[in-house]
Image 1 (cartoon, rainbow, N blue to C red):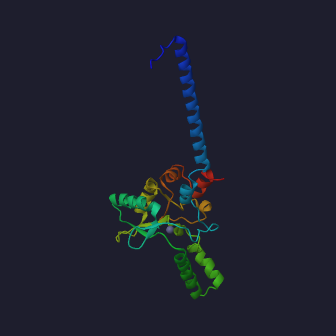
Image 2 (image 1 turned 180 degrees about the vertical axis):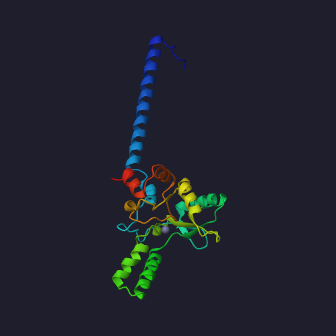
Image 3 (image 1 turned 30 degrees about the horizontal axis):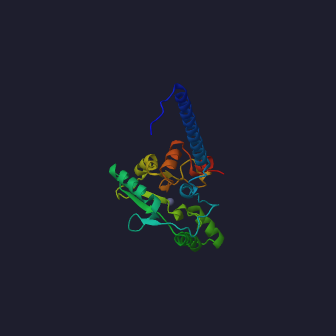
Length: 234
Ligand SMILES: [Zn+2]
């Protein structure tokens, strides 16, 4: 079949059609991008994956008792949520490269381990003469009530310098405070933010929130509570 020769009119018509088509596609793309952007800010999408990394467990909110999660061993005795295992390994390796001997002193704790830890401490106060109620109160100042520790999420780790000659931990702690975010971890209970986190300063306690949230939290100097209420509140 032979194509009819294009007259200036049909060419003009064609150009107009193409222009309209491109303009429509462009508007559609802008619309889709805006919806996705808005949805991300509002947390309408990606909630199931990303917001479970942002779960807040505190004195009011307990960790879900029987949450299905896959755990990975990071050394002989500690496990973490599998989603943060690779980043934790990379963080520890980077920390070792600059001369520290990072060790994990606490990681995932099951509900019963947390309960045990709490009861042992409460019992020790009772042995010192406290009644049951005040023993629990005293224990609560040191260890969160069973169900209320971030360690039950598998997303929190306590890190220390394992070098036995180093009693002073400030070296590794300041390195971690400056670099943990690069691997998706944040200093969860910073100094001076006690009223926001409801927690005393814990220089060894790091929480995985994923790389993009960790970067924003670090750069904007936020706590997890502030970050979640700024970007994920309903
Ligand atoms: Zn901890």
